[in-house]
Length: 143
Image (cartoon, rainbow, N blue to C red; front, side):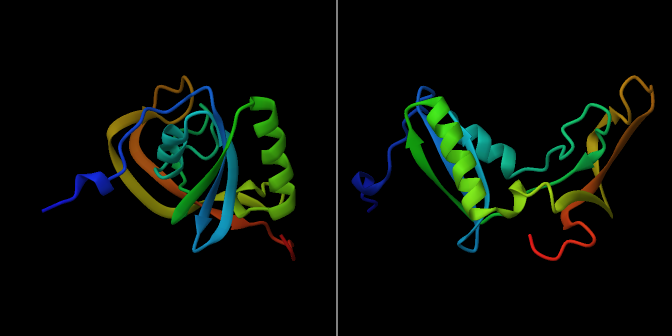
């Protein structure tokens, strides 16, 4: 018999509370962010998404690799933002490091059931998506 008292009950997200969250890959911090909806942000990070966040380059997909997450609840948005920046400077997580890394398109292609425009207002549509990976820039020694 299953003891339902040991299960964690679902409770709706309190969007008045802000969270500074950590994405971890094998217990190493790989990303730090802040949000008032942790469920939505984790869904975003755990699925393929447009790494360029541009309507101009819709055919590219990237995904952050992480195995777990943690978060700290902060009542105030400004304090959460300040703590996020302080922690990014302290830990220098991989996916927060745009100075030394970039999303590099690979030869890997996946196909979608939905065709999208290849460029904004181009009229050319494709079902192909190019997978990108987070890659260290050439000449970077540390970082």
